[in-house]
Length: 451
Image (tube, rainbow, N blue to C red; front, side, top):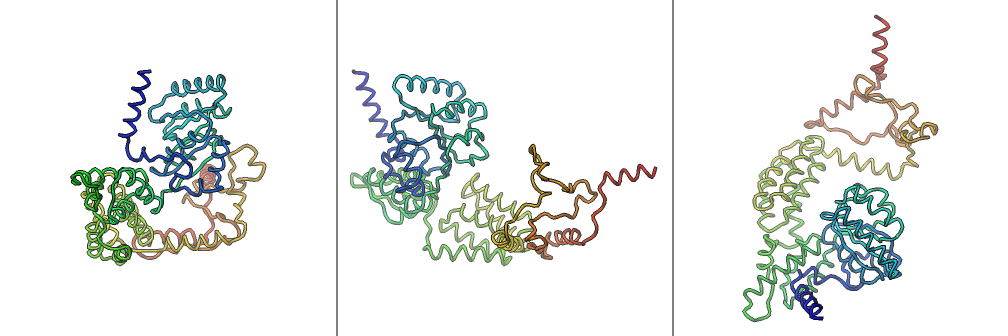
């Protein structure tokens, strides 16, 4: 009895000390913020949960979108026991022990088990294979959570036995609702500008928003002197280590527009000026980096293929190094992109190809291009008459590579700028209409015959 009292007291103290994001986990489906495409009235996941008919699922989405909260909520509203493992630390032995407990629970009490496996993509093949029989028989209802594409990271047999649900980043309204709940729980108020900054910097991550609010509240409480704490922009800036954007929403779009147009116009100094303006105003460095990566393909393209490499490296540096040092990486990318030769031919080529892809008939894959690796494919004519380019001296041979409806259409017209001029020369060579050279093995055979 005394032990139970101590356990209960410890649980209450832990609950009070738990991070704000943990204290705000939903206890009802209607409490979930965001993911209306899955949990709105009549939506598929909600119907399965309410009917207690949920089979194994994989929840795929960015951090802070509610994967763990949703798994715990499912356990609350169904008749199953809930068990959790982390793929980072769990072993095959842990899986087998959990399976044994689930079998005992089912046999003694006729109660099923939900296994929540966080970071499921980190489970290796042996660990996933150990789960497979129990998932297949229904002994375990698996809820796997992953931030990585499950088609690449989860074994095909396990994925085929699970329903995939994709969670989207929270929109600004959903993040604001979370923050307002946090203010109520923490019994504080916040200035509108402070909330705007928290919403903007959350980038759809609810956990990040609540963690930042919790730190901001602690800073505000430190100077409240017994009065009700008020979270200000200064508190949020200190919590985030970043500035509030000092210009309005319209100016935000105007400044980024000027930034992009300056680089497109090859004015490196103007690009650096607008970069400095944005960073000083508190613009998110990741947002700036993303725009540079887009510009590298949209406005430089094949005129200088290294532009995309430089822009991507700057974006990675922002994540790896962080501000203020990453300002140098962004500045280097701005100078490189501004001074690079410009071409938008990749963008216009893609637009033309997309138009044809949407409207040009059935788009059947030509028979000689179809996959011929599986048993029976050859008997269907797949791969027949395909010419392997590496069999020819120039590594190229004329043959049809597109559906008949769009054969001969030209999408990409390289310019004469920078590296793209060389690309144009290569394309002229393949477009020359000359008969393809004989295969290398045929040439070797001819040499042997001629002695």
